[in-house]
Image 1 (cartoon, rainbow, N blue to C red):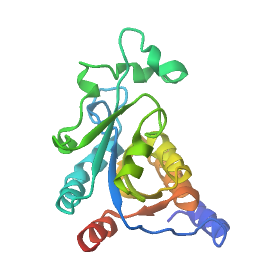
Image 2: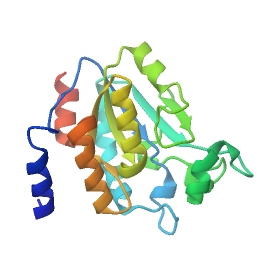
Image 3: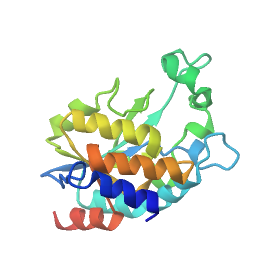
Image 4: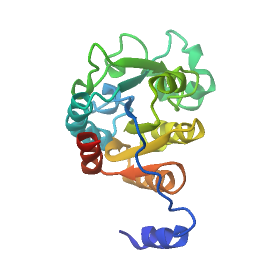
Length: 212
């Protein structure tokens, strides 16, 4: 741990360091693991996402074996002007590549959804915003959201905040989220763990799935 990280941890101790733990029923949410983030040369390419995707097969296999619901999200806009992206695609025009038919908008091979797994298409950072995710989870009886995907500072943070605000226990799997640079990745994991959910390891999550 760096000196600054230690100072932050000490400053937050006893104030912003509560733990909520896993609840009674979990769902695994896989956010936006699309090839635009893992293809060298893509403007969205993020080495941290490549590493996170590589760790996903173990977690997906464990969730499927435990019969935990697995839900995937992707981002898709309508060509030619991506008007459904609103101000977001004006602020971040790099997202305009996420249109049907663009290879960057397809799922990474390691996380291709099974035929019986739900795919929710979104246009903004949070997987909850403008989608049926919250209603779907409630209908399933889910109280815990195991959160994976990218990017940590964008869609993962936004989904974690909204997950908490919708009443779910948010468990972010540190090993299975990624970003384009380690600084925002670590800063946002710190914030999520302090205020919006629990940041847990892949091993902790696998142990929960195997013994729950």
